[in-house]
Image 1 (spheres, rainbow, N blue to C red):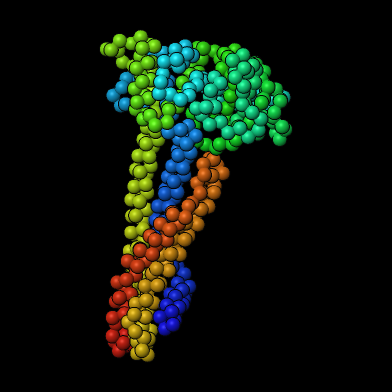
Image 2 (cartoon, rainbow, N blue to C red):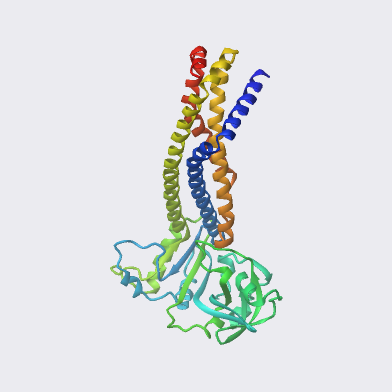
Length: 416
C-alpha cells in the first residue's frame, strides 16, 4: 500500500509539473511525437502493403505461374529492345502447351486490353480493362462473384455476348440498379451482364484490375479486340499441381514453350515464365528497406526528443531543488524522489507517443478513403509505440531523477 501511494503521489507531482509548464511540455513532446509519428506511420504503411501482397498471392495462389511476353522483373543489363521484339503469347501457344504439360493442375488463356469505355444508357465508365478469358479462368484465379454467376463452358466456347463486371464499374454505370440481365456496350459491341465481382480495392499484384474490369468469353472478345492494338496483353496463367515445386513446373513450361516456339539451344527464350512468389519476395525486400528507413529517420527524431526531455528534466530538478530538500527533510526516501522525476519523464514520452499514434490513426483513415488500401494501425504497432515511449522516457529521465534523489536536504533547502 505504501508503494502504491508513493507511485500515486509521483504521478500527481508529475502531471502537476506538466500542467503548470505548458510551453515546456509542448516543446518536450514535439520531438517524441514526430519520431513516433514517423516510425509508426512507416510500420503501418509497410504492414498494409504486406497484407495487400499476401492477399494478392493468396488469390492468385503461391503455385501460380504466368507465361507472357514481358518478365515481371527486369535485369539492369538486359537490352529493352529484346523484349519489344518478342512475339506475344497467343492462343495457339496455349492449345499446343496444354496436352503436353504434366505438372500443371489447371490453366487458362486470357487477354487484357485497357482503355475501354463501358456504357449503360447515358452512363459510362472510362479506362476500363477488358479481359477475354477461356472457361478455366476461375480455376486458376479466384473470382469472387457478389451477384450472378460465372460463364458456362458452352457459353465460353460459343463466344456468347456475356459479361461479368467489376464492382467499381457496376457502381459507376448502374447507379443502384440491379445489373444482372442488363445490356452494356463495350466499344461498339453489346453484352448481357450475368455477374458482378466483389469489391477488391487497390492491389499491388492485381493482374486483372478486378474493380475496374469486364470479363467476357475469349471467343466473344475476338470480335472486339484489334490484334494490332499495343494495349492488348495476352497471357497464359497456370496453377501447378500440389506438392510439385514451382521450379520444377517452371522448368517444364520453359522446355515445352521452347519446343513449341522451335527455339534451338543457342537461342534465348522469347517468352517469360513469371512466378508470383518471386515478385512477392522482391516486394518484401523493398518493405524491409522501408522499415529500416523508418526506424533510422524516426530514430533520429526520437533521439533529439529524448535529449530535449533530459534537458527539460534537469531544468525541472534545478527549479524544484528547494522542494526536494523540504520533502527529504520530512522523511521522503530517495526512491520517492527518483520515482517522482522518472514518472514525469515517462509521462512526457507516453503523452507524446499517444499523440503521434493518434495522428497516425487519423492519417491512416484518410489514406484508406483516398487510396483504397487498408492502412489500419494494428495492435502490434501500438505496442511498439508504447514500448519506444517507455524506453525513451526511462533513459531520458533516469539521470536527472537520480541526481535529484541524491541531493543533500540541507543544501537543497538553502538553494532557495
